[in-house]
Length: 458
Image (tube, rainbow, N blue to C red; front, side, top):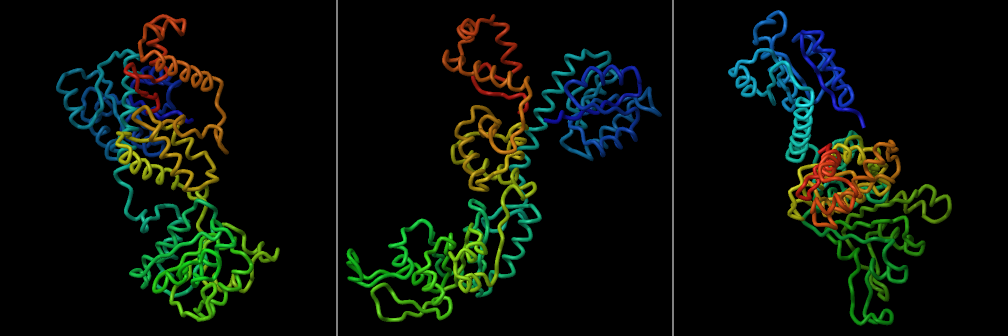
């Protein structure tokens, strides 16, 4: 994962170089020696953290140029954490800096170890604030009824739904499993003139072939063994509203003929019946099957395809929806955190990276289930990469040797801690290390003493 950015602003070249080398291992370091240079670098590199000297040219002995720089940085990014490191050590300067938005204040000379600790805390706070803001401020324009998406593909889909919803044209929704085809159908129904009527759905692949005809068309009493009463089918129940035929590509050939007749004449006969019944319903179908291929192979009628697909909508797979994985993950996190009554503040940086690098073969449905499980299993304040269990998924990033070792160490330490109810003396003995060494190891691995995970990237 990329290192977080750190901008060091100081007009003393020796200080710049020493600070740069001190933090180059933890951060991607940028340097600047004046306010204009600092703001230019900040706008182009967008670092998460800044250390700022108040005495900058042309006012090296004063503080106003530094305060102007602080104001400019915060105006550009309200979430940036600015740590003042200055030779201007008067108490009023520290108070003024913090009151104007600085995260902390150090007087020169500084101890690198102390600054490193403060930078780590500032980075964690920034990430918490960004995650909280993301959860609280999903834009209304990203919602379309129960659909959620901010990618260009989804915006185009929303626009098309808006255009065709209030027509009577049959619609064929195509897309992989788990992309939300039924939600698209419900959006079409909810924005149509039939919205006060029923929305009746049937999955053509989920019902045995010998029962599907009765489910669709209904049956008369005595039509077959077990038909003790007359029963209306889904088509008839959808009268005045919308009939949604999911997985239409799996409809048996014998029923394709009957469905085609209904689409042409808007009439049906119940199984065992002799009376034609006129039905006024709009048909929306969906499939994850390549119907063009199915037609060539003789598994799907071409005339039915054209009847169903007067308007065709393609729901894009999640892997092609740029930016939507994070948007959906945050929405699901909020939903399931409330459902489980757990105060989870967000998703760790490594967790977000894992989400973005996974190819999501199960699409939105898989993401929803992953987040729900992660919320249930999470120990800490944020969803971790381990909670998501995506390490072995497609496109997962290869671990470095150091990451693999730390992951293994963390799992062992957590297991021993839980087995010993977080009695650190017993845990240290079982691990074969001293208690102080166990404290250091827990700090390195981001494990809090009271038994809740506080990951370094949280």
